[in-house]
Image (cartoon, rainbow, N blue to C red; front, side):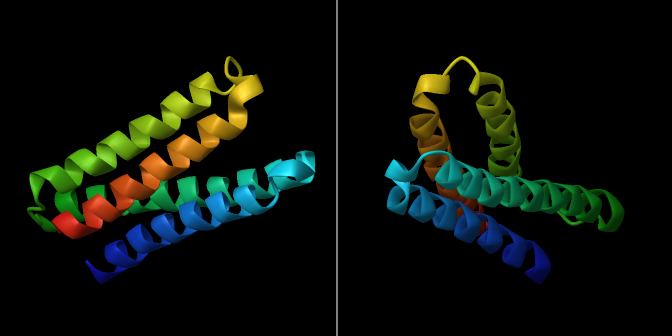
Length: 116
């Protein structure tokens, strides 16, 4: 359970770092976008590892987590898929897409940690 909490905190911290890097480098163009994309990719990988570990804990050890904790994890994974599907159609507004989705994922991570 401690490892899952640490991974959840890592998701929130990585999303926050990506937003801070984006805000500080907003006018620098492509290098800033690559840096933000790298941090957000790392955040998504941590999110997927956290979800896989949570499924393993529930299935393997029979732990019964709060229902809303599972809901927030599911919504976070679906959000990543939706943002990925909209990245080409919202290309002119990609900063807004990544900024709002980062804030949303950060909120979901905080809420999921508070529910446990």
